[in-house]
Length: 418
Ligand SMILES: Nc1ncnc2c1ncn2[C@@H]1O[C@H](COP(=O)(O)OP(=O)(O)O)[C@@H](O)[C@H]1O
Ligand SMILES: [Mg+2]
Image (cartoon, rainbow, N blue to C red; front, side):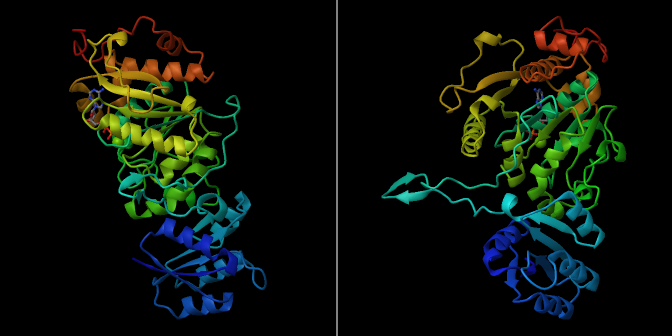
């Protein structure tokens, strides 16, 4: 638990309080009456004792100048500027002045905490007020002007999200697309390891510097493959909370830098995932048929609906389907409340999948004639085709139309027995 000191207009205290809870759920917060009192209190505190939040101030010193002065005094653990109106140039100024983080009050922190179900005369019933989660500015609808965003989530771990995102990214890159694979498992994600990388780009690097994500593709050295850039998670798990409120904003920038943005979510539905889900052109709900997987999927799908994600944007992806089960003969998944949602499947790839992904060979796996890789390629190609963004590439067109699979064995007869 850490101590925070904030200074802002009285009417903004609630919103600033919510912002601090987003950054540090356990932290304690006090408000200073004036800018001078805030600066003095930080000056007199022990170094690193206080995190400082500077909100908008009606008179006297400007908020940016006050935040800069506090940062220069050097005692604060971190300095956060909290504003309704955040522009790129404000972020640049703030970063140059030593401010650690700029948060937007109205977009990311206007919500109260999600309320639990209440007991209604012995019967459990849902809280009548909807769960309020952070809302994000929608991306432009015109997919000709930006990359599509496909978000993979599940409500439980181990169903194959990371594996599918890794191989899907490599497939799309092999069709000539510039792919960003964003790992929103901010504290513990391991997407990078599927590509044999020592780590992904630390997302904290993107929230601090004045240039943000502009020109990101050119600036970043870490690339999994010509065509795939792995972003995230946060190198230090404790910095995840700084990045989480900015996930939506990050995705809004990435769609202008890449041809395709694929998002790997953690098992739980965090604020970052909520923002990504709202921006998704496709929200892919992954399940694997094991006990509990379908109900976790139903809970996640229900939450997405309450967030305002249209069912037409959702797709259910059943992973680890036996190659022997014919498409029309698969087990129906009725009763999970998502019957109206389209359904796709990824075939079981056996032990080779963990073997190859565990040794960082996502790219090799994607280009192999594995049923796992081919079903993922088909899924990605069909999704891109639905979104009107199927690349003009022979492999992509073949995958989208379910044409003859590739026969290019890279691993001897590994998949030859199909
Ligand atoms: N279709 C599949 N066939 C075989 N193994 C799979 C398949 N999908 C996932 N796996 C394996 O299952 C394990 C869990 O997958 P992972 O992608 O880490 O799940 P999640 O990201 O949902 O937690 C990994 O070892 C992965 O290689
Ligand atoms: Mg995972």
